[in-house]
Length: 354
Image (cartoon, helix red, strand yellow):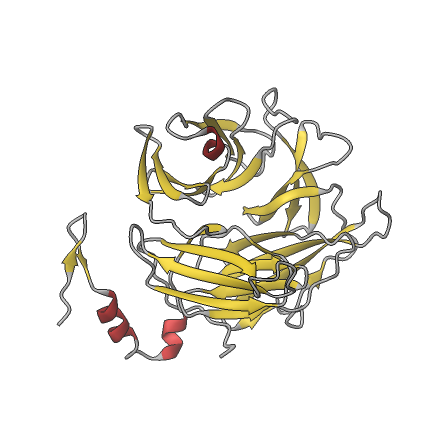
């Protein structure tokens, strides 16, 4: 008989096989709403052409591996999609999302459910610009897609559409199960990076091929008003020549600078969404223990229990203690040339595709 084991904090931990045995005896419907919130799991994803001998193959294979911290994967699986290139959107919830030239896809690694989402608007530039968030009030995933409608090489007509996803339902009440195009609203700037969801708004860094942005370096889309706006960067500190990027930590929008100062990552935080453009340099992290190459590729993933969990160039997962300013390695078992590393939460969230 499997026995409970003690964890580091002295609490009891049941073996995985015993947990599965118990859960399989429970009714399916309540399980669909159940989420494991105790500890995050690690998700590794590798993309490669379906035919490894043909780099131009129109089919891509996604190999997904799930594991607990400092352990080997407890399950792996693979799916093949009709895409020549594919991207993985940033997330840390129970569902993960992918984007390709032919559309968007959603996956629950816990139950190995993979689904292509409804057809989205065509982008004439061929680029994939989107944002993903989870609305804790409505318990919905919110996916937004920015698409260019212009046929002019030197001009843009960037529209936006929204897709909402909840348990066994895709699309809002008035969307007919699909994307809702926001009529009459155009994004005023070209953007770069994935959208970050904070306070029912999405934020992107502004990108201009011919002219560097000034102080107003961030574009915002408010889901409540369905209006675009701009947000100023930290005054006197923003370097338009360097590549800064956005993340969400502790429920706040953060602007991350890992290039201005050698082996240092500065995290600026906007603590009041009602006062956009008011920033505080919340964290300055010394990266002297990392190589220059890895230091420039570090991405903060989540703030949890006084630590910032950091993706170290898809090579390891680090935890930075904000009080004593020290690192600890949470997982160094990252092998196999993985394309993406994500935190995720086990759940039985299902779209009923099976």
